[in-house]
Image (cartoon, rainbow, N blue to C red; front, side, top):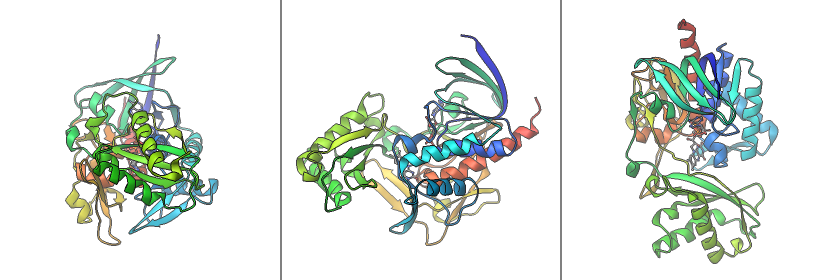
Length: 389
Ligand SMILES: Cc1cc2nc3c(=O)[nH]c(=O)nc-3n(C[C@H](O)[C@H](O)[C@H](O)COP(=O)(O)OP(=O)(O)OC[C@H]3O[C@@H](n4cnc5c(N)ncnc54)[C@H](O)[C@@H]3O)c2cc1C
């Protein structure tokens, strides 16, 4: 297979919510931008897990976040901000998000996107990335970009380029997760959000199911006869195993059919293909954001984003643990958390920026990932203007 060689200003790997935001922003700054995604669609974890709540958004939005929100509202008036206890989230129908991300990227004239494409090799001088190899089902490519953004969630460019990184052992990482959709529920009470975790906690206590399956939750979809079940699993319990999502979804679904009449004739309509990590490899940047920075609502001179979301750590044994910021407070994230400490032209965004595991438990949510993506795109475009090749 012949290798096609291409140059660009900014190359972004991963078209999750952070990568798409980075690509739009780099393109709008006039940078010749390439976005590479291994799936055939944009949206990453948000779409793979059919998530329904954009968390961590500012009360008032401008820029790409405002465009995403307005696009979602136009597609469905039921997509709107709602209050969940102390927090506000933007609730949306999962299928609408892919459409909005596609619409926004299609308008960008400096942006080229490759779907079904994976980066296989990164070449660097020790200080700077020179080239990356990519494979698609039909062709091989070699890119020579001026700046690179790792928006892969799992830190694949950080790893391949041997940039300094931060990675906790699997046993100490936050629980990973996946979702499945159930239809044909017979439910008049509207109480399944309470009943599902209650009956699964009972089953875990009686040792009928693994203890961490008690952290499973249920959310209704628009019609009350269908809903999404979210499971949370420790990293070491599934990595390297095939059909994990199918195995666990069947186990939980059969149990719910046994104990809850609402589920008796229900069916699994759809299932995430892979378990998704909340915590993986992060960049070791020029600065590392910490739990203390977040809880003290710290401000920085080179701030590029604000964070509103609490520290929501999915503990491997205790489940969801939340530490709130003080009311109406926010912390800032400095540009230094997006810049590699040893590779000059490497940036990270979204889930793999330079943070401690506890800080990641706040910065990883989708709203914050949009802000981080927009900032990374701008910074990489600016750097590419300063580099001559
Ligand atoms: C179970 C679960 C539930 C969650 N619930 C919520 C919620 O309700 N609300 C909320 O705001 N947040 C939630 N989150 C967190 C949030 O969804 C993610 O942290 C966020 O979407 C991460 O966005 P990202 O763009 O950084 O990464 P991702 O969405 O992971 O995107 C990375 C993209 O990179 C691609 N990629 C990876 N490697 C390569 C490669 N080598 N080559 C090409 N492409 C590659 C992937 O296919 C993917 O599309 C949840 C997370 C999980 C796991």
